Image 1 (cartoon, rainbow over the protein chains, first blue to last red):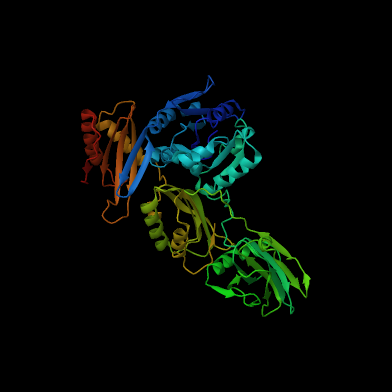
Image 2: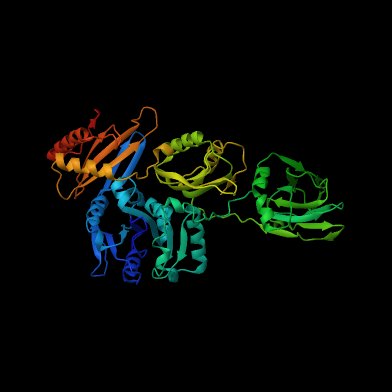
Length: 457
Length: 102
């Protein structure tokens, strides 16, 4: 079954040796899904299906460059795909299995460099299998392993029967930190529904960001937030000795004592925590909102501070450390009270230090010329480190969304459906190596027509 | 960058160039022909090139660049590209000589 535009969909299977690629391939070939599948397997493939249309590939790399633009494709794939298309009536789906050490970029780029290939074939998605038992040692030492995770539209955390739930949880956090776009499934013996891996439209512009990126909670400069109702009677905060001789805190106005309202204030709180602090000795008062106070806690014994905002209302107190680390208590009229709503912000220590995802969301319109120049420069200078990107943009003066996606320096974009009544906004996700989040955000911000609040993930 | 967006505008011209190359050069049956445009906006770099590559088994590969877009390539250009590729095929050298004329 080919797609509605009559292009043959292609799924690429990647994964380190022993991750279960061949098991998944054999599973796909034996499932009753009604598709006739042609398989391009790596030269060491072990497909056990006799009547499958199977071709062996040799992973021949062909590099093209022009000035700063460099593009690497798989010469053998181009040849094989060309030959396969002469037998177009024999199959309606193509699977490409790569070797364990393959870099997925040349495979992906093969589908975007030649108009004839682009007209006949459609890269549907990259499915990466991960051996949950052994992947950590590869993730630490192999750039190919990281790239296989980073490029994926779907990641199967396979062999879940060989590790504990807690280990898989930790692994998923790390993998999610690398690739915020991929759908992640946990599998045993590569058992997965076919609709989760085939016809997923991972490179289809019409589905750009149809899969909402899942970003891990960033490392915030605070570990706790608590919402309090404060009337004319102020709050008294008492702290004992803790891990630090001081603790930064900030007070912000809040509408309602809800998780959503606190989340909406996170960017503001982060900004406040980057401001110059006001040193506060015991007995001092936190009386302004939007300021960073440094509570001096070096002296022995319990220390008392007061929260005295100028107006009554609901407030959220962000604290650098968790209250229990300083045995913090809060009293109103000498009676100890709890926050109406509170939440912790755990610092995750399982991020991958090299490969990551950066997402930028912003309402407003982009200056097309500025954005063009910024993105061109970015890809020229860092295209080899930007594995994939996707986005939906609101360009000033244009009534339609602009959707795009890219693999390294290859960029594919076009106008999409018009904006309706909803607020015009931009969303971009980058997945890459050594991404400089601050630089990306500032660069993007400089292209906005008006100064808008950014949401950064 | 939007002007560089690489999406297929139809494979007709690409197919025609490939047919010309097969007509003017003795491309072995097992070789695939790749035709692609690369653009670079950096000052000092060629702004646009079309690469015509012959890709054979055992990693045999020959390529010729021309400073024209795919749409601009005519039969005479294709003939010159093919002649260069033919020389590479005969010499079995991977050459990237440029053909600047139009």
